Image (cartoon, rainbow over all chains, first blue to last red; front, side):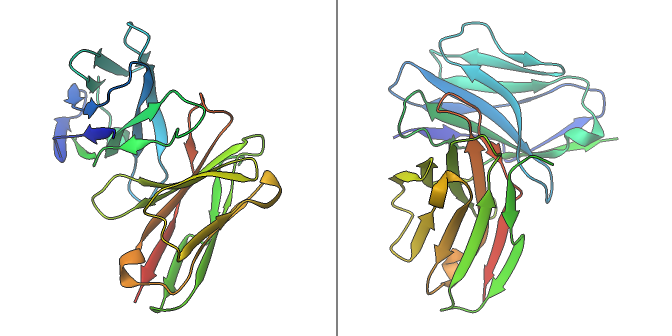
Length: 116
Length: 113
């Protein structure tokens, strides 16, 4: 079974600084997708960034980038130039590449506080 | 707004009552998913539909839970004989295909007294 582990329940960062959120996962499959979702307080989850496991290049989306280490089964999220609006719960998620069973497996989340 | 919508946003019920939630996916999305999220946890998969067919169900989905997606459009999730342990946020998500990102709705927060 796939498991996703986020070992940092809470993180904080000074506005304009950089922070890295950790995620590890366990799978026996060679191809899959990894995601980071953001869930602001009382608001819906939105996609931050997505990585296909077959791609060696790390995904980037503006201030957000990932460090994908396939052998280590590690998928960390780096937020550069942190903004107050980045404060939220961040969830790492795994999904198989399959026409069935493609539900997400989520970690327990990391609560990010941005300090002005 | 063409995102995923869910109704109601909040529901308070007494133990033993039945409740039904509705999810309207993004219009062209053929896949629809239900998740449950308890406090301090990530969402856990419950079930998913491709068009009107319910293709997978988690063992979390006890026989008190039933989901439908008539005509492959909106979906309903019904919980019969609610228990206090059913208190959670119920999230719906949709995607265009299996390779596509899932887009989440705002959720329905259920409180069972």
